[in-house]
Picture 1 (cartoon, rainbow, N blue to C red):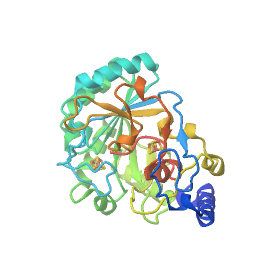
Picture 2 (tube, rainbow, N blue to C red; picture 1 turned 180 degrees about the vertical axis):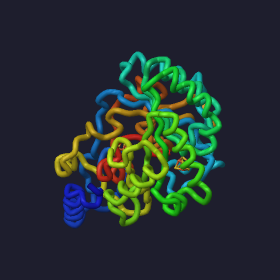
Picture 3 (cartoon, rainbow, N blue to C red; picture 1 turned 60 degrees about the vertical axis):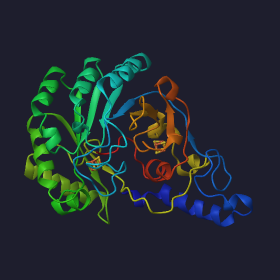
Length: 336
Ligand code: SF4
Ligand code: SF4
């Protein structure tokens, strides 16, 4: 169902507007997202308790070969705010993950463009050798295509363990390049076709954009995949994942503890209940663990320097929490 037709969401906005209209006194003047414990209306802020590690993400660094409009992490060929994480740094978290979680744990790699990090293939191998399932988010352009031989080798040695998710913002060139810039369509398609031909476990990340319905988007992708020989089912929401638009300028409601019941949602279904991400800030001595893939820069969402330290409760004190997770329904990794 398209997000803008979600009845629970519409109901929540009505409820939220009524609350805002009815609120008065000192609480009404507190800016939104200014108090970690309370919303602007003075209600206890919504929070998410950790329920067990299912996905451990590594941000490989923010450098990217392209600069997409609205990239949530503002990656570009010049943004190195998050440095390339090293193979040894990743290994120490993998050691800890082995102790804390079973082999069912999924290890995710995101960037920037992960294949820009010269250590990526080694990190994938270290994760796969431990028996973890591994997911890599990529734009499938030249940085990935330069590593074809090593990727085939890894997939052969660790069958059914390595998955690749390719970002393709729209099913036509104009829609994709509107976000990603000129000359990004053909290289991405070439990478996608190659991955499919070689039999990689493959999914595609697209974007809900404009007025196009989810159904129309899936139909558009389905005909593209058929034409290009890409073996991905556009009708399977686990194979074609459509993420909400990353617009940053609209006013969003805050999430209080009472919202869960009103929205009919459970905090246990939110990404930070089961995921963490390791990031290495530029010039930092060591990596830190943050709550999720969506908030790599905000120090309020830094959870510690080890996985063990990071497993506490997350207070939803950021517009992304409302916009993308609780109201928008983003439940897994962000696209690359
Ligand atoms: S943005 Fe991150 S911290 Fe906020 S609700 Fe989503 S997953 Fe949790
Ligand atoms: S969305 Fe992905 S491909 Fe685009 S700039 Fe950001 S990290 Fe790079």
